[in-house]
Figure 1: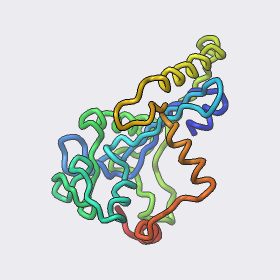
Figure 2 (figure 1 turned 45 degrees about the vertical axis):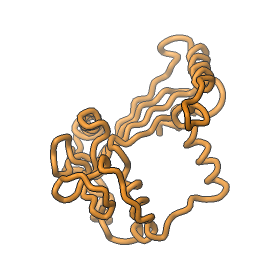
Figure 3 (figure 1 turned 90 degrees about the horizontal axis):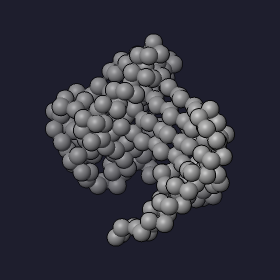
Figure 4 (figure 1 turned 30 degrees about the vertical axis):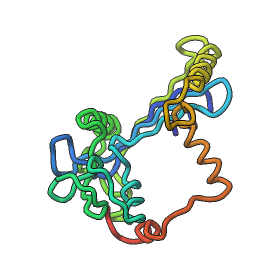
Length: 215
């Protein structure tokens, strides 16, 4: 939705609740979801800037990817059933908020905006995507769409965003990097590649998706 707004010349901030699968900072029991945040802004030419993140260190998909490859994960990603850090993706019971208390605060903000403010369930009361497929989910999304023309010269705004991207591209990359990218640029490249060749899915992940397993 953020990308759709940006492609129509708007600036957008959008947030969404998700299934409880993250321990609050300092806790051992899942309470909030990965509660993603997206921001998008148009520019004079080319694809819009698109920033899209979960409020956890890593998304659940990264755990599934590690399981499919039978690889360990950093002990900063998730915890086991006892709330202890784990490097075994098969032992993961809950994810950890990004940057500790900062991610925790962000996921709470998302939950309040997309849940409580809209009269919808909050925190651990948000319903699961898979548990009961006969029922609609009870969770919310919150979207802010801004017309740059209401705040000044829209053409000048687009020029400034484009110039920002150009200046970022001109920065000398650090060792091990090809260049400085704007948020969403790598994702856009991958999206075009997958549009031609499709998206490879490991069999173990496919089996998980068609099973009744929950997290």
